Image 1: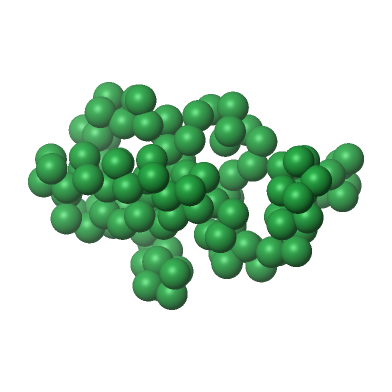
Image 2: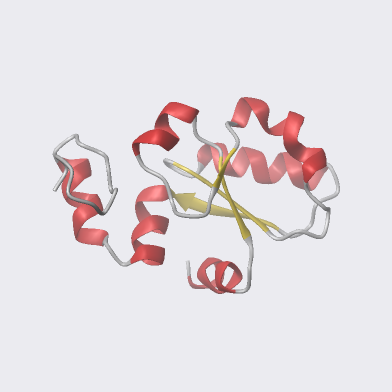
Length: 116
């Protein structure tokens, strides 16, 4: 995780490969949502030298995206793993995210909505 955080601090692009619905429920600020089934359509929008960090719920879909990009000539692609580990590490709000997950209320919006 430390290497991923360093890359993000240096300007790596965060790509969320979950569905649009999942992204709307909880996401990481400044991330790009490209559902895994649409990744091929968007690949040409990135430079092969871009540093890209993919994430999803468990790390499985993001690993598939990493493998796909590497197979197409991208070398600076990384699996950021689970949003539930990455988001708290980036935004410093681990208690709130875990509380919401436990209560089946995944929001993490950091505002005064019903999730608080």
